[in-house]
Structures are given as C-alpha cells and as structure tokens.
Length: 357
Ligand code: PMP
Image (cartoon, rainbow, N blue to C red):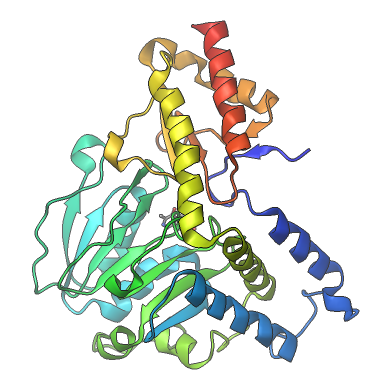
C-alpha cells in the first residue's frame, strides 16, 4: 500500500512519474538499454531534453526571450551563482528564514546586502510594504519558506531585476513569468526527484547584467544556455523524470488546476488545525503556505508531539515531523498530494485529540 507521504522534499511524486521512470530504468522504449545506460548525446535523450524544456515553457506560459536551463548543485549552488554573476555592488534580499539566510550569506561575499526580514516575529509572516531602492542590482525573494510555512502569492512589481527561489512552490500556481528576471529551485519538490536544478532566466538579463569579474565556465549561465544544458553530462534520468512531471501537470489541467487542488488540500488541513483545541498554526493567516503546512501542539500538550508522530505513522501518514530547526509538525502537501492523503491526516489528528485531550 502506498503511504500518505508528507515529506518536505524529496517528497511524494506522481504515480505516472514513478511508473514510467521505473519502466525506462529497466528497458527504455524497447531499446534493450536502460535510460541509465544510454548516451546523453543520443537522439533519444535529446528528444527528452527538448520536450522537458518545451513542456516547461508551455505549462508555465513562459514568454519569448527566456531560457529554461537544467544545472547541478541544487538551489544552494544558485545562492552562490546568482551573487557571483549578478551582484555588482549591492542587492536587496527578503529574508523569510533558513533558505533566504543562506542566499544572503553567499551574496555577502560580493557586496552589500539590504535585508528586509520577518525575523522579528520568528518568520511567522511574509514581509510586505517595504521600499525597493532603484540602485540595487536585483531583489531576491524566496516565494515559499519550506521550513516555516510562509508563502507569497503575488508576483511583485519592482523596478529592478527580480530573482525568485521557487524551490518549494514551483508549478503550484500560475506565475506571471514576465515580472521575473530569474526563477530557480531544486527539482525535489514539485518537479521531480532530487539531483537537478531548474533555472528560468530572461536572456537579456543573463547577457547584459553580468558583473565585471572573471567567472569560471561552469558558473556562467550562458554556458548552460549556449549548450542546451549539456556543456557537461546532465543528470539523464532526473531530466527524464522532470519531463514525466510536466506531462502529468499538463494532463491534470496545468498549474491553474494545481492551484485549485492545493487550496482544497490546505483549506482542509488549516481548518482542522484552527478548529482543534490541541493543535495550532503559528503562521499569520494570509501568509500560510499551500505547500508546507506547519503546526505545533499547544503548550499543555507539547510533550505529546512525538506520540502524535507515531500515531500518524500507524495511520500511514509519514513525514509530518517539523524541520529539526523548529520542531512541531509540517505536512508538506505538494502537487502529487491528494485530498485523501490530507483526509487521512486530519482523521488521525481528530482521533488523537479525542483520545488525549
Ligand atoms: N530553497 C528552498 C526554498 C528550499 O526549500 C531548499 C531545500 N529544501 C533549498 C533552497 C535548498 O535546495 P537544495 O537542497 O536543492 O540546495
């Protein structure tokens, strides 16, 4: 039986991805070779890469003038690459917690960082209403804070280049790509298995806004753009799996359909938390993530947190332990999560409360 998987990433993936990728691992297209055994330079894999790029453009309505790239190193490598390539002297960063803090750390190697943060309230809200000075090289945001469970749902209008880490809410809603100069993330949430990083970048930004410093070849975005993300050997099976995800999202009705289901799942779980006398969500209502639903036990029940994790696991709900840095619980409800998964968790919460409150 397939469990109700609430892991934060790597996380639950679509059944079609699992089936088609595992078949291709055993024998790809009846070629008598595994997808793990073929050359990345062959026409079969080239077709996969081309389709992954074109489906990404289609599913997200990416306008002309943008490149879709696949790289290694995870979103964490992007923290460094972005600043290395685009930070001339100063940039603005919105700090919503761990991941943006890590991005800021890398930026500080290359210049001054103007930081707007929600640290004053322990990252339980998404910063708003700040001014963006025109002399910044770019504004960097993290659209969804995977650990604290905050998310921004609008595409900002700013007068400087906008760069977004969308690692954990990519493909979960329609995005006005034209407002961004770059969007990036690790694949291992809504896009596929861990091991590949996606970048959507405006060509004019990539070509014209690079800082005047020597940049090693593999750290230049243009290297990936000019070589179809194959300057070096790409992670072949990961890109195959990414293509499977994109096919699945399209077949399910696209990102608008993903958003609708995400809202249904999140409403169900947040309502159960808000109605409970045992569980509570620390995040302000308007900024609550649709992807990572963070909650804790009220002080009087705190010592029962580990018991609830075990109780939920008996009901086949796995991966709900909060990030090690914050404790409590986090149910990650990415695109492949179903209403049934969330219903099972809500039932476990109700039953546990009935027994223990
Ligand atoms: N940004 C966000 C929002 C994340 O959630 C994560 C990983 N959970 C990262 C960056 C780091 O990604 P990676 O592990 O791919 O470097």
